[in-house]
Image (tube, rainbow, N blue to C red; front, top):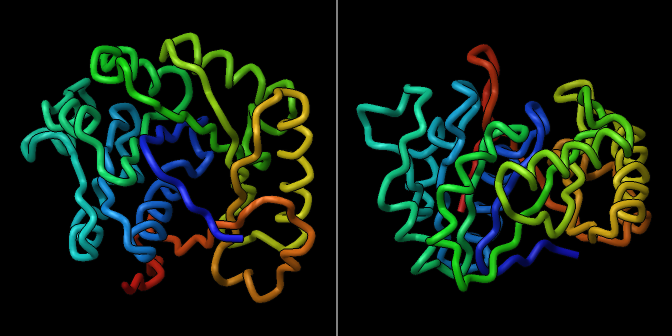
Length: 232
């Protein structure tokens, strides 16, 4: 089963959940399927591993990336471009918004309330059970509550992103899937899809999953590592 999203989607999660990597790969996946895609970088908290770091690559693929003005790209300031409101009011076939981590990063979403008005907006919580604070169902529920409170919006679904970066094993993927299924049951939120890095996909038994799988071609890597080459 593939991932087929349409409409406006906000990607949220805790620091280190991998939400930005998920947002980038969602954009690429949708573009490959023939959709018009726009991706906004609203991560105004974490100065590292933000969507804007790969905006050149995404632009080459035909993905419209909305970022703060050039002179503010490396700033950690709550700067919202008018283009952000514009892309929400006039969305593409898939409009993705990469929000900042934790409840602090999601605060900026409340400032877009007027733009979201009368729009069907989906907010998905990325969960990596290998990270602190979301390694228990209780922690995931608290993260959900904190993000909803500060953003003044409701989370509508879950993305399972179990990984230990280069140390990830097939067993980690299976255990992570079981974990987010438990979180889905406890929270009442649907599990939209899980992620698996492309290197592990040949070893994965997809019949174990009842949800779609998004292949991850990792782009946000330290300087000493090479990103996976993305092609159209």
